[in-house]
Image (cartoon, rainbow, N blue to C red; front, side):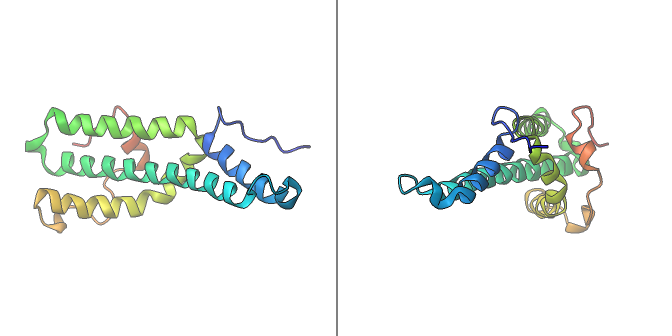
Length: 149
């Protein structure tokens, strides 16, 4: 059975990685008209940029969820909008590139650590205010209906 190659309209990230691997595998068979290694590297960098964007939006989401949770007196529309926007950005990235979804789990702990540190800096609250581990799950954080108490 032949491996089905990803299509860029169905999973952009997987397509980028597949194209990069194909270029590297073709190597000298392509000829000198195309710098296959450099083009492959650029494609991989585009995939890396998607993972970095996912990480950035995840950190923003976690930061605002922490501030929402531990500063209930400051729950205003702007903070809720930041949560909604971060969720929307993550959802859009994963919709365009479903192969990014597993990266959310991989990024979770480190992103939470950064968000926790940023929450301390932004709120002026002591670090002990915020738990060492996230007080909500990845599924809760991404759920449009979920807002911590």
